[in-house]
Length: 178
Image (cartoon, rainbow, N blue to C red):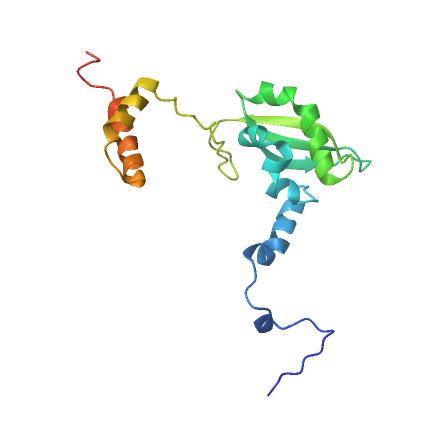
């Protein structure tokens, strides 16, 4: 037997199948964001895209406060004390990017709140340190590792042995440091 459904009514929950978690939480996220003044939750969810990776790593949007006239809100950002001067210098560019995300000049001021690198009363905000790039290995070590693995015919095995030889050769000999 075929089911007859009214095309104008939305399908029942069982007929829709699986739903994305974001869709289920959309209403709760919107309500929580509006309590903090975020009329557009996109500012919270896409902060890294709006602020840029460098600023997003050291800042978190905390609150949007609206003035009595309604236009020209203030965005409060949380940052560490050490990074506050760097963020302060980039506030104009950041304000332009935030307003571009809103689609109009919603934010007129950006206020900074300084805190420790870890720990914030409400959510234990943790700022991620900048990723460290490993130093490039010495060309002599690379040549010695390639020479060591050269007799092996299988390219995958040779690459693995070369990597292992590089790791062994770059280790510091404990007797050399004394």
